[in-house]
Amino acid sequence: MKNYRKELFYNTNTRRKIINITREIENCVNESSIKEGLCLVNAMHITSSVFINDDESGLHADFEIWLEKLAPEKPYSQYKHNGYEDNGDAHLKRTIMGREVVVAITKGKLDFGTWEQIFYGEFDGQREKRVLVKIIGE
Ligand code: ZN
Image (tube, rainbow, N blue to C red; front, side, top):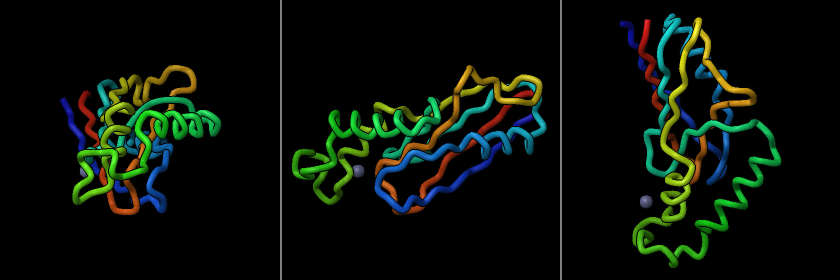
């Protein structure tokens, strides 16, 4: 069995951002030369997510509105977590959007359903954050 590991880095210019990272993950699969296996992609921070959904701007706006209803950023004082930090909302948003995705690799390609794309969801950005890509297979 072969294995491959890589870290990807993101530093968003806004507190929250959704970034399509599908091409970068495809590049990792190509680099790994693994043809049949599994690809794990996870955020290495507790205030950002990796998830799979549609690359459609209306949906991304809906995620922002929905997450702000569930866990509004402000007022910061509403969160017990916000003593020395102001990112209580980001921890909650990350939890609902998930930590990681696992995608099958078949014949050297990510084996997606229709419209599936991989996204990095940043909820407390403007600093360097990491995403882990781990691929195992043959
Ligand atoms: Zn925190």
